[in-house]
Image (cartoon, rainbow, N blue to C red; front, side, top):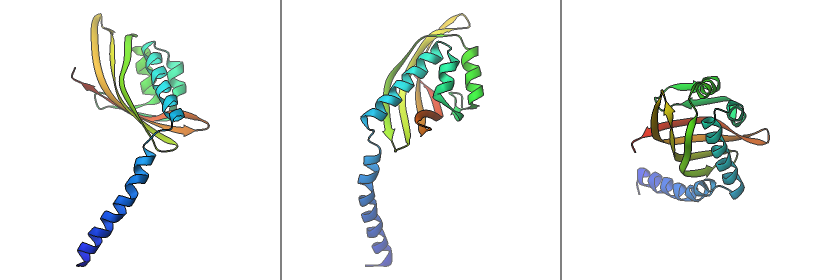
Length: 151
């Protein structure tokens, strides 16, 4: 066998050994998954009701967002946007998958939102990716991104 072939076989063997460990890490514990799902739900309800105090408590002070238009937002930017926006009539999570990496969790899902903006009804559907960290005895969102989907 050539050295390239030996390295390829060795690399493939190491990858096969590593895959079970990676797969085990992505399976959330029932408690962690339920907690993050509840936080995502509380966040959606608080945002829709313009309750910046609740959203503030859910977000880490250093959180960073990429909004649906691709803009970066700090926590202060995000909270200001919530207070300036009209309340949502409805915000429903369609799907959510929780990937647990110990003290970090990634939530990936789709939500629908309906409301009235500038006197006109609107409805949108977005995919989100939120990263959560276990800090000081509680889960807080440290990063998030959302993109608008076609219906």
